[in-house]
Image 1 (cartoon, chains in turn purple, cyan):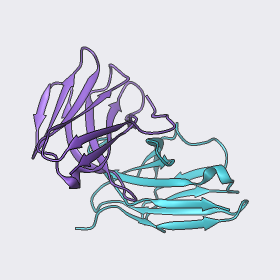
Image 2 (tube, rainbow over the protein chains, first blue to last red):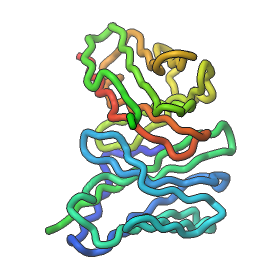
Image 3 (cartoon, helix red, strand yellow):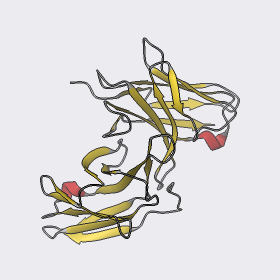
Image 4 (cartoon, rainbow over the protein chains, first blue to last red):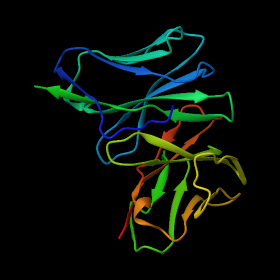
Length: 113
Length: 113
């Protein structure tokens, strides 16, 4: 559903390690999912998307996994770099009513040198 | 290869004044979306527009807020008689297809004194 919260959860990862960011989505009718990266002071940047007829999709250094049974989405970042530091949001297209993209609560990814 | 252009980048208004936020979508995109973001929170959907039509305004406050996307020119988010609670970052996004792969602008930071 709509993201609410007083602060963002943080994931701290050693540089060079893999990062896994998780997201639980709200609506079983959603058929399209997107991951966005937002750096401080900037707008969200598209990373990767996946449709509900797939369970895995790979991009450059990123992989998205979709588990429709438990309504769970994850973003895996391989060999995490300092430039990966940002807030990551998952988003879903809820088509049960009017079509629109709804964002989940974000996760702040922090990289340890 | 211009992306989504938003202006102004920062807007300061006193309580009771009007705020006008502009958004020019990616060339060729006919779907425009407005989102609002408070610090350390996710993006809240406000409104989805196509050229000359409001498709979904379920996230817009019923009073003081309006949006348009005319046949010619940018999309405008208008906030009348601003109050301190309107202070936030307002992001515009556009897409080629209905509610898929949104591209975001850099946002307008509205500060109400």
